[in-house]
Image (cartoon, rainbow, N blue to C red; front, side, top):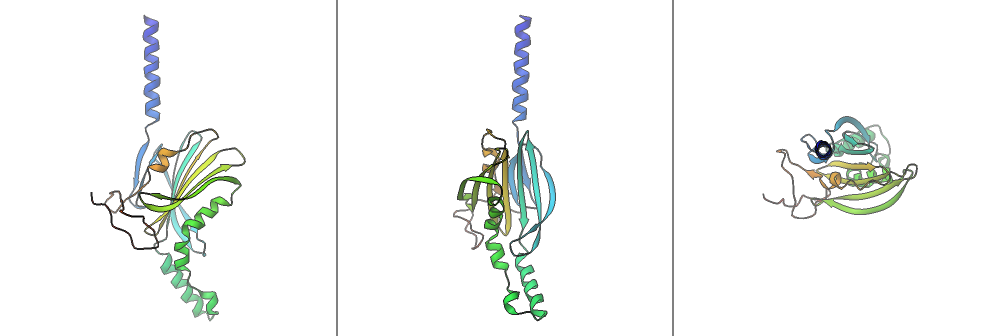
Length: 215
């Protein structure tokens, strides 16, 4: 009887520990207007991001890990990009340079932000196993899956642009591990009050925002 009691106690502890390990953190970032599930409270790092047309924009990387699996959300603030490109163009013209060398690339830099970020992954030493148009809560983006040629790990990406902020979701798991669906599918965009934004139609950063669902 004592042996059975010890076995039952051990199983109970094992199940309890396993359940606790599976409890992810529902994380929200008011400064960067998103919410997502992480395995642990993420570390936050400030970065400078070089854009396709030569700007250096501020950003933050939110990262967390679980065993050999790594998860991150990188947010780059493009809200001042148009103004910075305009200033850059005017300064170039004031120096007397030929107008063709002083083009204002603000619109191109913002419109191409998703594809430029995607390209930074596609050119890595990895095999592309999936590439598609994608949306999360009807906010359009790209979805990419890569297999690392060196160690067989897999990277699952979702890249979006919302209200002139670029969001790069990177879930990288070791060879043979399941897809990080809980991480990727939990992504949401929030407003200044912390409420999740849901649209009635596809949102494209290039056009006026569609109506939001009333809750």
